[in-house]
Length: 139
Ligand SMILES: [Zn+2]
Image (cartoon, rainbow, N blue to C red; front, side, top):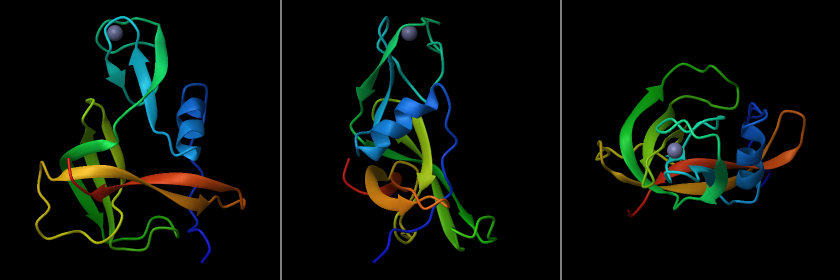
């Protein structure tokens, strides 16, 4: 079975290390070296103390549902409807928005436990890479 096609992620100065870690199935976020705050999306300064010092540190990959949306219209050929996208709050605090792996469970609600799942995927140019998605899982 071939890896599913996915649009290439937007990359840049602060996003490159994030996606490089995802390719190694090692989710890491920027962590402020002054006050320990994790942040996402990547950027130059800590949102709480404005420090410019950070390191890329591993996160648990566990979180909980904040909200979700079901797309019934197809915007990308790679995502046929119904396409479920979840805003999940990591245990470390930042919010990650990602696809939901599998079907939308009827019992899903705010606070439902989530965990990050990694899968192989292929960019439109044929490059193989790793994607992450939320899946329903124990806290
Ligand atoms: Zn800080």
